[in-house]
Image (cartoon, rainbow, N blue to C red; front, top):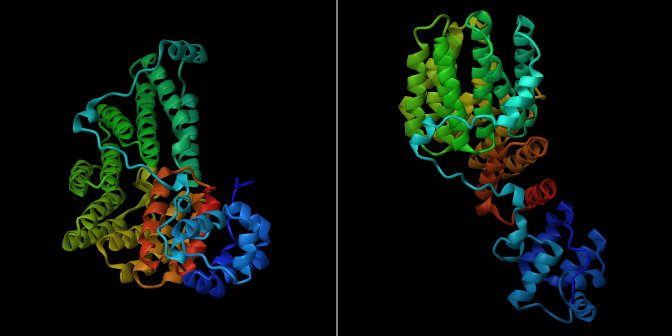
Length: 434
């Protein structure tokens, strides 16, 4: 019998209802079908169509005159009515994890890729950009580009960096065109500084999209531009981005080495305290991933000490995001990575409570970290509730990195498959990414 109109998800309230959970556990399909009809409005004829069964067979099962014993038929019922496999003692069904939540791990590229410059604009694009550039660069030109960069920062916080790639890369190419046509002097140096931030931002947006090789290419370009200006703090900033990426790629040793190189670069500069606080936190993340507890705690202590000494008035604008709220939540994340979940949970919760609600990507990350610590601390209900909040935030953000966190958290729920809070979360996850 052909299926019609496809299955729809059962209400989460039904999937977590104790009667439904008990009936599924016993494979009592008479009760299951009755509940599906009463609570979801799916009548026997529709059940038959969805499950590739005859209406008379469904009627016999509902009346209790017939049982289901064959595993292939039980699987058809699970798939047709969208009952999670764990509830019926089956393996996880293919439809339980939506395609968007399945993130392919990127292949790590050889170190030589770091030296590869980004592709040059095509001749056609060069022509277009020259036509757009009508006149000499002025101070207002720099102000306009800086304003655009600040808008990219804001949009990155609110909606993720993946969707920003075309705009940021296009703006970077435009800045390079202006540099080529501007003579040596303060305006040219200003353009190079802005191009360095655009290249870093391009790297960051590709990092957020989990396209790590391309991200490294742009980070390297940003570093070269900043080195040409002698801006050692910005070089350190780029190294810190590369350190965080190495942590995500699973190379914590490289992440620690990059964090140390960033610290050495920034240490002797003017008013480096806030920059150093951020860099010691990057180091702490790397040591936490390595489970080097003593090194992690030393890095955290140094981060807090540098933060206490910092005067944001003299700190570069790009590092001012690292405020007390960020210090608290990042300390919690480092301790969670280290396995100190009891100590991490209140820190992440407090940081999340303080965080600006416009920073949706950051809040989504931090909510998933909080849910993970709650799960480790045995609070399954609270963990799934927090993860549901994170899921709401994640659906408004274009960030494959967040989808990686969704997948990781869902994997951690496997030992609790079939528990009502998990069933409810999985139903919300399927709905969110449908």
